[in-house]
Length: 284
Image 1 (tube, rainbow, N blue to C red):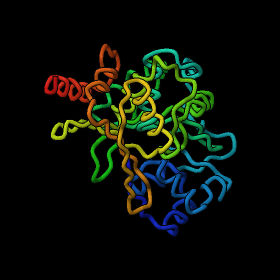
Image 2 (image 1 turned 45 degrees about the vertical axis):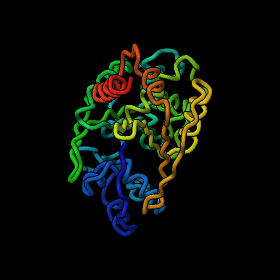
Image 3 (image 1 turned 90 degrees about the horizontal axis):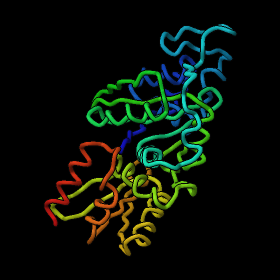
């Protein structure tokens, strides 16, 4: 699960927004672009473009004159219709992984989907890029005090709108589970969610899932009751920032959940699958 303590004051955000685009301002603060954007929204600070009526080159910071530059990379072969219909294991899995660690944006100057994972887990990003037929690069991220990561960032209004329709919103707090997800593909969605936000605790024989969306966690709980008659326990944790996290514990029968989600799977984060298989071997 990704998270960052947003303790930067309004004056700093205003100062940077007057001088830089969100991308460059985020680099100055050594935070994610999405984090700077959310801080701007929190403090109601206009973007560089709205304040100055200008745009900047995203790499050099050079102010672009009207007609100059290309706002975002264009990929003609991108499968923008990928999430119009959730009808395969891979689509359901990556929708679940997006629900755990991804977000979308439909702001006027940036319509994109983004998924960032720790570097050891990032091999699965290549498979996501392959599903989308994405021809661009996967970005390497290095932030002070944080583990190296990699990010798949794809600009496309159509693709973004499809993800939003299927529950992937601007922030993880407002993610939900798509009503268009077929029942037979639930296990693949849940595997994606567990790969992103799940944790197997061997000492207590428990499987925990921690997310910041109440709607999402409640739907997963309902699935467990419907599929296996398993009652889950839910705890809420409040951070100093006021952000809420919901931890769902699959007590009593986590083996059923892990077997259901990982058995015969063809796409997963290797580290999480190894953990699941270890648990299944230890507690037969």
